[in-house]
Image (cartoon, rainbow, N blue to C red; front, side, top):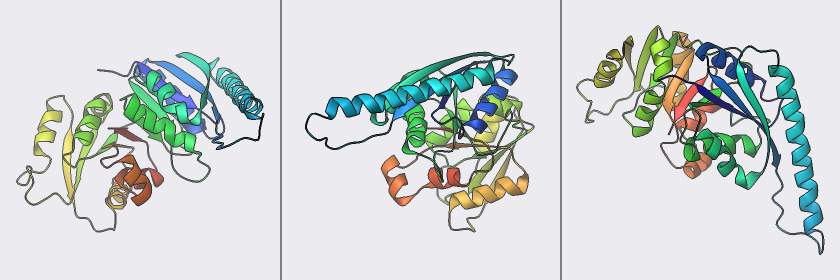
Length: 279
């Protein structure tokens, strides 16, 4: 397995610099084709219009979204035209409520989707919608790139967040190209259950599975010494100088994560290295 079709969705050229540069670097490293969706988003959620104004307002907002898409496409084309990779850029317009179907359809045929941080200052709801559409509608692995990160993912030391969930296992399987290229894969387990199926050998079966793929894997069992699992994981990433995290996404419902928080959301809010996720 290899990543031969990469997809990235740009809704704001200024905010997408890190994800675009990372996607370019990955396309070169993997000898892959890079598709760029240049998306203009109609962000209006108008509940009512004054009499006779509906068609006018809708047309104006869609015209603005089309203009945004064309400007993003021109900027992406200017950036990519001198690169030695295979690429294509497409201007797309979507209402914010229809992002799931627009992104999901294209993500379905991508080996990997490269996206920016969906949470944090300056992030509109369309960025979160893009990430969730790729994961849930496209069933694709998503590489989240933090702000300020540039170049291809080196993946020399990879932390795999292992909690025995189906989401984590799916992420590991879809991250195999990165894991095979790594010098070390650190299977990280935080507070394993005393009576779980892996109680006598946490991470042992996963380590064996990865070793059969020629992957050098070690197991780190950590205590939950900080309030959140994501805090412990992020500290471990810093302490070990890891350059990539692989983890399952949204073990709880998206609604619960949005209202109460969760490992996915809190991990991404503080991510300093790329995070490869799958659901």
